[in-house]
Amino acid sequence: MTSTDTSHLRQAPAPAPGASRWSAVLAWLGLLAAAALLGSPRARAQDDAIIDPSQTAIDAFVRRKMREQRIPGLSLAVTINNELIFTKGYGQANIELHSPAVAESVYELASITKQFVATGILLLAQDGKLSIDEPVTRYLSDAPRGWENITLRHLLTHTSGLPDYDDAHQPLDPRRDYTENELVHLAGALPRTFTPGARWAYSNTAYVMLGVLIHRVSGKPYGDFLRERIFSRLHMGSTQLVTDTDVLSFRASGYRLQQGALKNQEWMSPTVCGTGDGGLVSTVVDMAKWDAAIQSGALLPPAAWQAVFTPVTLNSGKTFPYGFGWFIRDQEGKPYYEHSGHLQGYASHILRFPRQRVSVVVLANLAEADPWEIAHGVASLIRPDLKPPADHPIEDREPALTETLRQVLEGLRAGKVKTEAFSVEGRNAYNEAVLADYQARLAPLPPFGKFELVGRTEIGDQTEYHYWVQVGDARWLLEITLDTESGTVDRLQFNPL
Image (cartoon, rainbow, N blue to C red; front, side, top):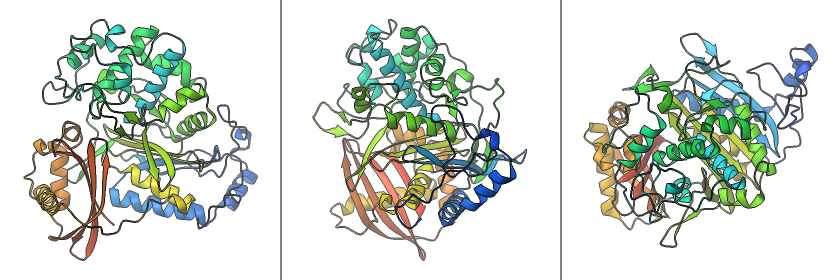
């Protein structure tokens, strides 16, 4: 698409699962009004007539990124002006069975689950059953001593000081089933890493506790509570707690890369899979309904939605761009909200530009996939003004740090970088297996040449750096986020431009 005009995106009857849909006639939060036309020759002819360069460009872009990232299967949804204008599946939902990915393919949402759990907490607050500024100990009677100054708001915004449950201090066995009481005890055994509100550090533990808290306060497991209060009301019929026993139509299998080879996802116990930090499954069609509900202000009063999308204020007075289950960004005066998820063979991303009323959802069945890149790329095809600004060289006032980061990259290539180089958050994402995959990917590359700093941004207690790195005749982009206080790596991405 080469302009911001979307008037040519006509409505058409909904096609069969897996086919693209240009503005399917959708009764939002209801049923597909055009379902009766499925499969009719006229409907197929109308759908074919809608195919234009914008769809072709999206298809070409998505398929190219899937090849680059080695993604087996992916599903995509695009909404404009609160209307679902495009859904499609690409590649394979299950490689062994040769099952194609379709719009209705069911994927694990991983950390996108957090925004639903956060909404569940706000629904309970709306019911008068809790206050997000009360201590956690008021609602979890078995919470350990020392949690008296941790509020629900701290848990919602990742400012509690609780490290991740799979930190080395007290590893979680992913193959073991845990009771909720055991999960609370496990979280209580973790040493707090900072005073609540002092810093921001992504904490899956916090959202596990919020899932438990929903059960304690409502009397219903958090998955049941969310189904009754959110999914049923929004007609999100394919969204539920992850399960390995229920039969789910169009379930996509998860995959991972291990030293460059594609492998099936590792098995995790149902209770570990189903915790509040990442325990839901869904489809891009259901997620489009969720986006429509947010855009229309459904479920919660305006003040509550405003709180969801307000950056958290730290004790220092600085803000960090995270609300309640959403990252809060700004791109040249265009605010947008987003969140990714990575877990057990799946990767996900939801991207919302509320003022432009453009949203993109990407669900993929590869743990190492980068759905962020795909979501933003698709958004920029819909509206070129949503394309992330181009990088350009800037003055490097920290040459010693740049050299250190070069050594980190060389260490990744040589397999000599240990997880201790990463922060608590970083260790969860860059464990020994992931570092081995990085080595396998980087080892064949030509020597790293010139490093050019093209971006430096302070975000709360983190600093994000972008470098152009010359790799033979090609230019790659190194994106690395450091914990400002410790200097350890929170996040690292290295991809060809």
